Length: 72
Image 1 (tube, one colour):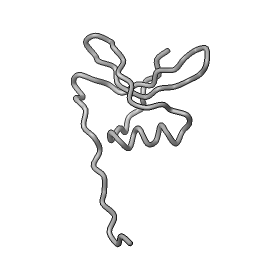
Image 2 (cartoon, rainbow, N blue to C red):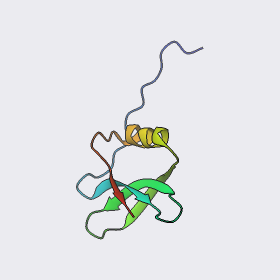
Image 3 (cartoon, rainbow, N blue to C red):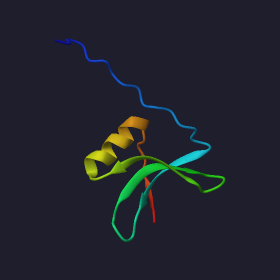
Image 4 (spheres, rainbow, N blue to C red):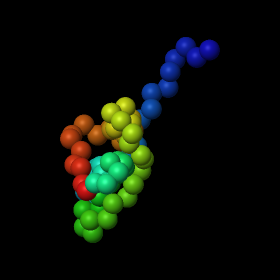
């Protein structure tokens, strides 16, 4: 039985090089959370988003507070 819970620190990502985004499929509606490399525009996926709870987990994991851009 744990009395004190360990607080998880948000994972770091290079904010000058990457920006968070959600890539959504027009056909199926499947959404993937990840990061866009600003220079090249390449998308690096991190996790599948099935609902609002998954998006919340992604934001908490990386400490993201701003609105996330959605790309198609």
